Image (cartoon, rainbow, N blue to C red; front, side, top):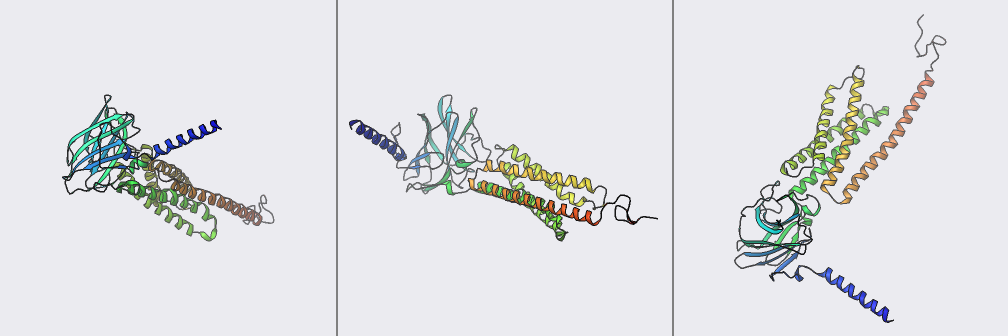
Length: 394
């Protein structure tokens, strides 16, 4: 009985410790220098914390903490006076330099920034960093205007590239680590529900390409392959095919242009495979559209070669499109439901194509059988008719 009681007491103690540790927030944190701050916030992205005290004259004392810090990384916390994103952010940066923590200020003026040291739009008379127990902390004093009571905050972490900060990830929480900070009430709103214009354009780029290259193009190819077998659909199938492919191309060009624009704004972050396949798709798609102007007539001797070229390029576009869309999913890292939705579209198109393939083959074989029964091949001619149904010449 005593043994059971001891086990129960130990279990209760362990549960109590787990609950208390999980309940610890920024408010229960004790700084090694015994600094005290009026407010603090548990930032929901990247596992960071911000502590601050605002003076009546606008001076802001802050401590930005990044637990689970790796000495091969850098961290940054910033105020953006004019926007909610990265561009224009007035940042405080810290990393381990020669085994010692180093902190400095860096204004962000472009997406390709390397976080070079520079003066901010407000004075920072004090900034220092502390690295201990796997946690990096930036301490700073910011001289803001006395009428500034709410600020846009941005925070980030990324790998070091030698002695300079490298490019941080552009997926997941790394594009959501932003929000507003009410310096008077202590209220914060994080970037989980806020989408910057850049993220919005990335999403638009993805949607345009899924609709065009990933859906309309395969659908147009299916129309050409299967509808023309049905005599009642001639020549409607051709115009539907052209309309579908041209619509896909136009929307696809818009998606391609958006991607090129995004790439030019972030020259330090290049997804070479996705970019190169995208450019290849644009070139092949343009070639297909202009090839319609050179389409020979059905009885032309070069029509067979044109058909081979047209089909080969078309299938290459479809394969590359699907591949590049999944490359884009890996880059954007959206919710899993969007990737599953596109997989569902592909499964539907694939199942529909299999059904149509079987149906059209059945129709073609049936027609050949009926044709052979109507015009049998009887050698060199029987009863005055040759094997091709033409009358013999006497």
